Amino acid sequence: MEIEIEKFDNLGRGLGHKNNKVIFVEKALPGDIVEIDIIKEKKDYIEGKIKKLITSSKIRKEPICPYFFQCGGCTFLNTSLSESLDYKIRNINELLQKEGINYEVSQIIKSKKPLNYRNKITLKIVNKKIGYFASDSHDLVEIDYCYLCHETINDIIKDIPFLGIKNGLITIRVNYKDEILLHIESKDKLNNIDKLNELYKIAGIIYNDEVIFGSPFLIDKIGDYLFKISYDAFFQVNPFICEEIGNYIKEYTKNSHKIMDLYAGVGMLGIMASNNLKEVVGIEIVENAVKDALINKNFNHVENAKFFVADTKNILDKITNNYDTIILDPPRSGVNKAVIDKIKKEKIKNIIYISCHPQTLVRDLKLLYEQYEINNMLLFDMFAQTSHVESFCVLNLR
Ligand SMILES: C[S@@+](CC[C@H](N)C(=O)[O-])C[C@H]1O[C@@H](n2cnc3c(N)ncnc32)[C@H](O)[C@@H]1O
Picture 1: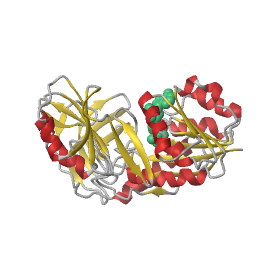
Picture 2: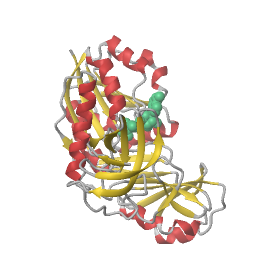
Picture 3: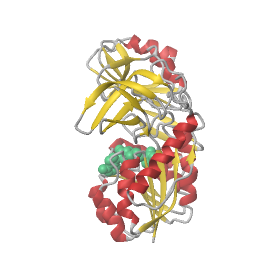
């Protein structure tokens, strides 16, 4: 089947039409004419991948990565960075417009490093082979280098086979000192841990939730801030963008007195927003992350911050207009509706909503929009070369 690609869809795939059906084609670009292999066919749409490139789009370039066409890790290595940035702005604006939200985003803050920026990767190991799954499948794409990852991660990927894992998952994290934290989930016995430690600065190895070497955490540095990050705690994957977000958080909380940081992780945003004149209360569901946050406030000489373990939807009574600013930085599923309703009921003055998922952000903004106006909204290219983006949205009570 031959398709002319008209535009990107909201997952960064090429979109075209044929026989009254919408066709989504992985890694196809607007302006391409492609023959496709069908992956999935439904009544009104088809998902496919390129079988043959008949006419190449003017914006197409040769991907730097040899695994690009098989691997599900990134989206835009076959075009320029500026095309990918334009796409991200266009995509959020289309979503806002569709939901009747009258705001146009015009700015995306670039990653200082558009490649080799990721401080964390999770790889599958299947029959001793290490790699990613191809997109929407469980077929392993064996890799020994990922252009999104920090060079130290790429160095150690090549030596992971030393450990003798036959099947499992490995998460590799690296910090500003090139120290490495490994979290291995597998039933296989590990070999050669000492050998790996001779070659790399291994901060710790966690094997199925048991610390078998070093410590169960890394300490990372973002600007002048230090953060302890336990192996099971969330931390943003792009340290260059974290520093930029820190500047915006400080700017937009400079007149706040009491801040509630919901979905606080290891406390990064709350701590950056604090200047010891303000009270910060952080809520986070992962216990180790909260323990980290309590240490992180001391690392960063923050006196007036408290962090609690809770599910945000279970602390609605604590969300009150004693707080003048709420920071929302939820997972991809967005903010629980009961939390949004309580924020609206309490008429909390300012909201800073940081989101890694435009669809759920726009869904939640629609609920807030009647009562809150968007004061500023911009994007951060946290996940450069992929279709994902981090949005930063400042809302003020109307
Ligand atoms: C996108 S991360 C943001 C973390 C932090 N703000 C940061 O920038 O590092 C979302 C965080 O929300 C936490 N989380 C997920 N569901 C939650 C819930 N229902 N209640 C509280 N925290 C939750 C996750 O564990 C994770 O740490």
